[in-house]
Length: 349
Image (cartoon, rainbow, N blue to C red):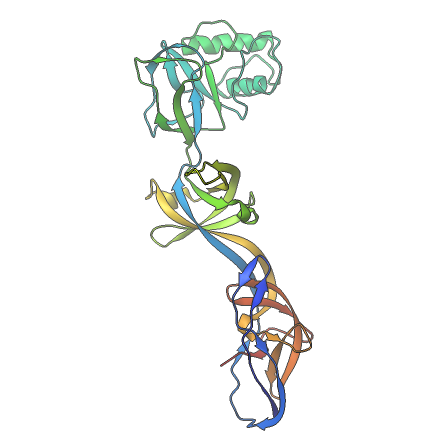
């Protein structure tokens, strides 16, 4: 003989947000019911439970950087938008003197000469070595041997052979660049601080804007899934997270803070058909591997407090108290005495 159970709707507040669900409150009755009466059941499953959130993204080449003039003169050579440039190539020319692209994290900010020391010296020497120049030690000290290699490089580039690297002779970038836009014009004057061009990396990436409250989603190194316009998906990884201040658009509004997230995609071939595109990016907010789960609707709000599930087997049904974990995708992680994958639990009909 089975005890009648009355099911009543309730609500659940899940960690990380509000999850609307049907919960069940148990009221026992001594009134007998037909033992053959059907009970709606579902199986407890063991699975990886993921709490995911999606956001709109833009496929392009990631964030852009600005190259400003460092010396006054006339622009005599400029690249084209979309052009890709590599180490040792001319980025632009002023008064027919080339500005050369080199690789490094630290921007060029001073004149380099004998007795200079620092990270920028190390970058310069690493580039000289990569371009085939030798006779010096690659370290952070600018010696006479470094100057001799620089003179050789300057001769090859058509620059005055001074042995010192003047501001404006090189631009350091993280790697190969793709010219995004060109502001200067051939034949027009350029001066210190004037924008010559902007560039990005050469690999396509996805840019996503999130609210500041969504910082938990945007962890550098986190795996994401990118949905392309043809409904295919490619894996991605959060490469960079920056804070962006969005100016107010009206007198009564205040500036807001957003997160700009750059997602790197290793499978560049999958992006070949899309110069730019609107995409969907799915972030994993939380993940629990190999846990027991049931539909949220299987939870009972027990009269004695807490939650439980109604387990059904050949001997009838019984109530088992459970502890809840992650809520995601309409399911909830549970732990309880004696529960295992495959057990049948009751759900509202």
